[in-house]
Length: 578
Ligand SMILES: Nc1ncnc2c1ncn2[C@@H]1O[C@H](COP(=O)(O)OP(=O)(O)O)[C@@H](O)[C@H]1O
Ligand SMILES: N[C@@H](CC(=O)OP(=O)(O)O)C(=O)O
Image (tube, rainbow, N blue to C red; front, side, top):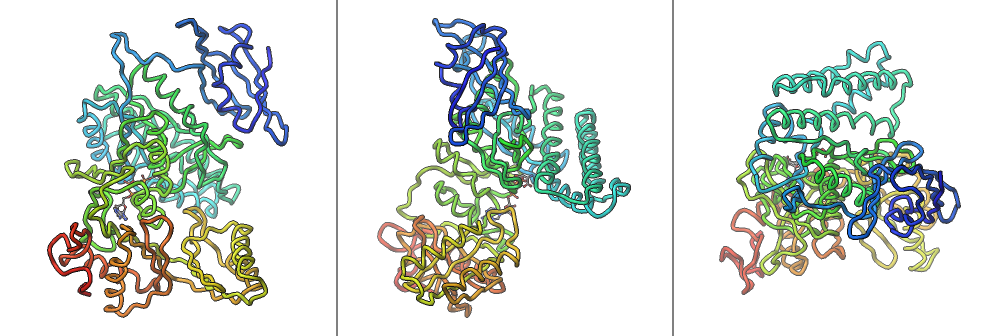
């Protein structure tokens, strides 16, 4: 056995691609090589063992080596020295073309799964990678079952209602689709064992939560793959944590690491070229790079899985199929008259998602934006609807307001300096306190001696900001300022063309004045697409309805024509009706 050394934190995943290292390999077809990765600062070697799995061959005088690299605890990314051939036996280039992601709402029953399968097959010109979420509300039910298990005792686990519901839904689905229940029986057995383990330990850690919820995606993808194969559409199932989705070890809210992209590309592309079959990938899941345990990307994370695969493979388009006709002008559960938004930029979609529109995962636009791949939001219940196309740029010449987003249950802090520190020192100190306590700040407005800001209640999805933490923040801030903590506030984000901010704000404030609401804070960020208003939770829904009515209904102000008049020819912007 020979040993190779790689230096740098990212070495295990990036430097293997460098050709120079391979020239050191002795016998390429059957070599067993120990690779030592030395993490730069700490000089801690992490040993990985590599065996050549594809042997080597010569093509245009260049060696090709396929490696299977196994981390100590079982990470198995596959690396190869150069791209595999992308030609089929007829010499035609066949490449995967797009990603299609179907969320829980699209996969809620056997009937829905049939429709999804039909939909996938209705685009014969596409060779898609399919990303699936868990069926219906399975993720919620798994979490509830876990919480029940903590206190019900191991002997009562089989009586947990949510477990029975999950079993029943998945077994019924296999039966109704005519696929063998053996595709999920091992998972159902293991799930019950896991719940018994939780019951015995009487605790549900974040790491266990991630493992627990992973059963949802693992089962939905297996059922769907079996069904596609049954109807003659060749499909192959992948668990994202075995496919190369390498993440941080932040359980319940992990971040995808760069190593993911080459690893996923090589595996999907390689398998496709050798033996084409529709890849069916679990959304939402990954593998922690240190722990090697299953991680999740935050609630709604399958959108991010889809865009990451799009970036990894450099695909033409990423489609996310939902139960609504695209991104809407506001949350349809707040206001039923919301309308689809035909075009958005990545920036607008990111702000919209970050500020609470449940329709997209907050981080999901990043890979698409980095790779400049358009994202289409479509309705699996109404495939003919055009949906929303999200791209790098769009025609903003007429754009005024695009969408209204509400984020509830936000905590606001008014911090007024006691002038113990100069202005620079004051701002720096305030933000260092938030950094030390690892708390995210959303919206900020400052004057010379005061700051108003809002705190994200869920720290980007995962954790409730608990009272103890808030008390700690206030205690620290009170060393340099007078602090007023205001809870139960909402952020109303006006996503639109900030070039027309005066027009938008004039109209918005007119509307809010008419319904008697005082805005407590306002912020227009550097993003150029978002203006945020803070109001009381109790008033927020009414505000959104009134704003929506005024901007999007009643001959409103969602667009403006080139002369400065409204698109529908009504009043001029300077005499806005409230
Ligand atoms: N601005 C918005 N546009 C569209 N849908 C929204 C918006 N805000 C909230 N939603 C909600 O998001 C849901 C779709 O997202 P999600 O539940 O994640 O779908 P899926 O589970 O299919 O991925 C819709 O049913 C809708 O209720
Ligand atoms: N099943 C996970 C991941 C996901 O993305 O789901 P959906 O696509 O249904 O939002 C969740 O419920 O969070």
